[in-house]
Length: 353
Image (tube, rainbow, N blue to C red):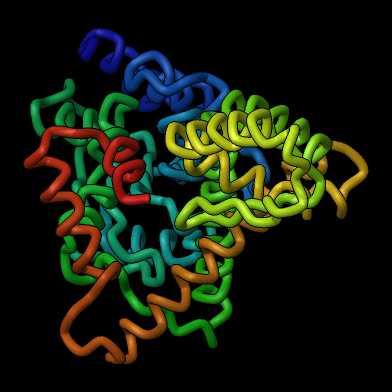
């Protein structure tokens, strides 16, 4: 971390005159872009979010496959010294808590004299498990402040604390939200919206991974149906019906075509099942191939989300007893297996499904 650059930025912030809060925004953006290595497009100053609020600075987390977690860091700036005082800082953060979304992990308050950093483990309340880290800007950067800033750096995204706690099943990771309160309802709906976007993106990547196999299978399947319209295929196990109507002179060609389809099923069962049992229904409902794929992606993501919510409901209300398949249970077990086998998540998901 470039201490000279940090000290220059802190000096600019210390020099902020009263009534000139917007003049702090360029320095704050430089802190996150030039020092903490976030991409410039992910650090927004005084920009309205999807929730209709305008944090002074909002930093998005750009993670695997270019997925975005909006408002991973939110910053409230003041041009007068107020954040050293715990009561004053608490009042301001409470009034600005609407900046916080389901993915927010850091709330940073900064004025010409103080930087206050709050790690967010529970988005539904302003009060957190860990105390704020409070640093004076009157002195050059020290080791503690440098470490606190490093935790918000782009390089820390892969091992961000909220994700780590979730994977290891830390109690409280899956907190209940009382959605009768307006603020809690907003965070809950934001969490659903974020989950739906990420699931849709994930399904899209999965479909892209099997696109070439699906195209080849589609050609084989369409040729087979054209030549042998009375034949049908069922899966799990692979079986062909309607063979009695195939003319005897076509039997050899028919067996070869079935053999090719069986081999395609063996090599790419997911792509084969999509083309044989799913894709035609979506093409019938759509005007073109793109619309069919979009519909398949969105409905698959919606189905996954509904199943996750149903599982969480049954876990929360004790239908499975003490055994938990997702919340503080299954994810931790899956993470332990992944680490033991030294394999990445996509590999284990392929094996599982």
